[in-house]
Amino acid sequence: MNLEFFVDPNRCIGCQSCVAACSECDTHRGHSMIQLQYVDRPISVQTVPVICMHCDSPTCAEVCPADAIKRTGDGVVQTARKPRCIACNNCVLACPFGVPKMQTEFNLMMKCDMCYDRTSVGLKPMCASVCPSGALYFGTREEIEQLRPRSAPVNTFRFGDQTITTKVQMMVPRDGGVQHVDVLSAMSEEPVARMDVFDETA
Image 1: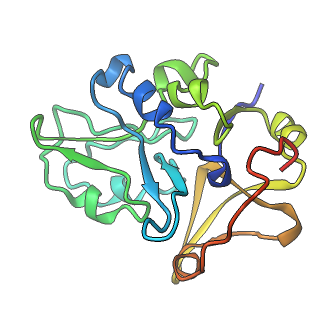
Image 2 (image 1 turned 180 degrees about the vertical axis):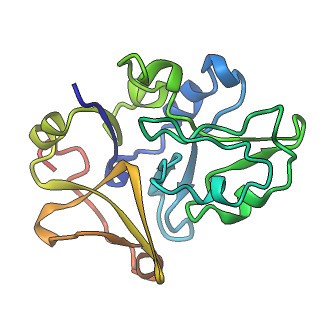
C-alpha cells in the first residue's frame, strides 16, 4: 500500500491538536516539530499547518557543511544527526518553506521527520492521527480522491525561478487546473473567505 502525506490548508481550523500531538512523539518529546501560521492575521483567523515537505532535492541537506541531514531511501528528510550537527543555521536559512528550527538548548537543528518511526511501519504521523478536520491526512491516493473529489494533490512548488518537488502533497482546487503552486505569487493574493470548509466533498 502506497501511503502518502496530504496537507489541505483550507481545512485547518487552528485547533492546535497537531501541535500537541507532535510534542508527544517519542523521538522529540516535549518539542513540537509542527507549527501553525496565520495566513493574514490582521484580517483573518485562517491558519495553516506547516510541516516539512520532504523535498526530493532537500536544500537543507545540500547546504549542510557537516553532512548532518540525510534523506531516507523512501524520501523522508531526517532531522539533523546530533553527532554531526554544528548548529551553523545554514539549513534554517536555506529552506524555502521555513521549516528547520535551531534548538539552541541542544545546539541541534530539529524538524518534522514525518514520524518516521511510525510511518515506516504503516502508521499515521502523530499530527495526522488527531487532526479533526482532515487538514493533515495520511493515506492512499485513492482514499484522498474519494474524500476530496473537488481537490487535487500537487507536489510542485515554484519560488521565482526555483522549482521544488516534494514527497508531501498539497491539496488545491481541482477545477483550477493547478499544476504547481507559485509561492511568491500566492503571497500577494488577497485572502478569499471559504464557507465550505466542513463540506466533506470539498
